[in-house]
Image (cartoon, rainbow over all chains, first blue to last red):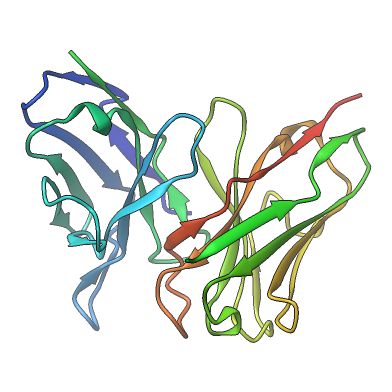
Length: 113
Length: 122
């Protein structure tokens, strides 16, 4: 199985500042035939199901604010929130869908400083 | 509006069974692969099982293989998870999740239900 490791486990950022969450896969999740990275990011607020933010490592889901962006390739990926808003407080998960079983990172809890 | 509504969870003893259901609406159900993803209390997300749109191919996590069976009834827009020989470590909120890409098995999810809670305890 591909192991997804996120860092940090928790993060406190001031309103309006940048938040960066990292995700590392135990093997490359770049599919050479289409040059796509099989990585998604989700946001989960307390008491709610996860919400898809980003897929193919950098494609924003329609309706997701443009302050959310994804980057990276191969084994190292980043979710960036350019200007933190109060409503962004949540746990964030990365997920690889390169192969079965699809696996998630352990989650990063984002709070307001 | 796309909606997924799970049901069937409950409190059971180790070794017992439950059948979880997920009723879908707002999209062409048979065009999409579907999955079950679970979340133990206070823990992260674990993919459990998936089934393609026509129901002919199924996939399982090693932790549930041989004990859980995924199925779907496209005439009823309903996804199922038969859970047998339940263990304490199966205690979790079970989410039904819809694949983002139509007619594919990319297995990332753009719509999730609210979940149904399975508690296994003696």
